[in-house]
Length: 279
Image (spheres, rainbow, N blue to C red):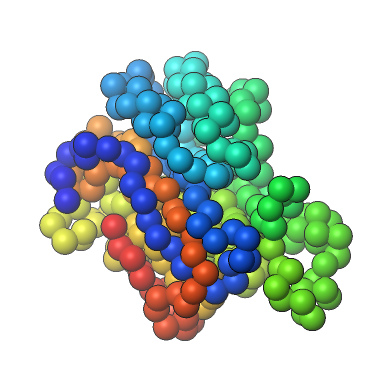
């Protein structure tokens, strides 16, 4: 694992889901998180260039696009370039939520971008059997899970009863949430896959992926990777930027592209969170 920067930020990750609809076999989802833009850095140009050449069907953004108040103008400029590139490359659209570093003013400005923002909201895609939802959160506010459930019921037309008798018609359920520690809520709500960031994978680690700090109450071995709780998986990105100090050690930034396949999931599927694919 590189100490500093990889040659490429994008890399493929194979994920297996038991409830993946047959027509979504091979679906590719690009995951952008935690850019922490405070100035125009060379890496952002490389990320945009790689995004312009990548192959993906869907893109998800999981927060912390800026770092501190005052970063809004440069962060919006770079996010606009990235969002427009992604919107041209993916056929199913770009969806996002904000993180705890994204200021209220910046959240309003982000509405100008070609992104469907899912703060405590849900939508059902017209093109494919995919239900997307997002948890809204900031420095002090937790998501409104009840509002998300009500919205999910509304967009599916009250399909819960039909799902009991026709499981094959059940759409793939994807959740965007900046904070990975909401995985238990995602599992309780029946999501198949959650996308998160926030931890930066630890940002500074010892060899063998040993994080020293992850900015939340998750155990350090759950700082990044694919986590599993019961039948729900959570892809926790290492992110693309830094906060605090502009340094990473044994924890390179990345932009994973998940390739979904139907099949048995790794891990036991028990009531304890497992890191079934650390990175």
